[in-house]
Length: 73
Image 1 (cartoon, helix red, strand yellow):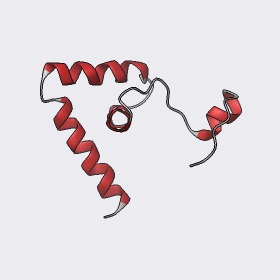
Image 2 (tube, helix red, strand yellow; image 1 turned 60 degrees about the vertical axis):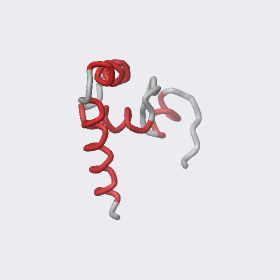
Image 3 (tube, one colour; image 1 turned 180 degrees about the horizontal axis):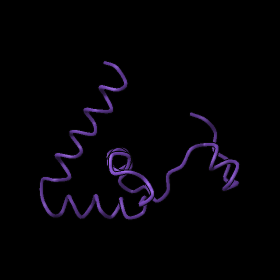
Image 4 (cartoon, one colour; image 1 turned 180 degrees about the vertical axis):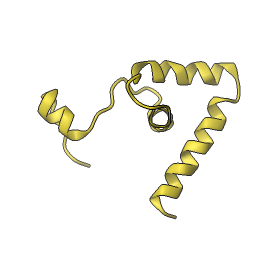
């Protein structure tokens, strides 16, 4: 399966799960509120993989701007 297909399936599955009931929606919004600078689709994929995420950025941003050294992989 292509990477695009895997990501698309994850996004679709997560959006259905989030919209299932009020409690699921609130849990999603809790994560999305911490990641407000990201578009909805990116917030949804972050939530699918790490619902407890408090920050998300590229390796370059972590290493160069935040001075929190992250190794690739």
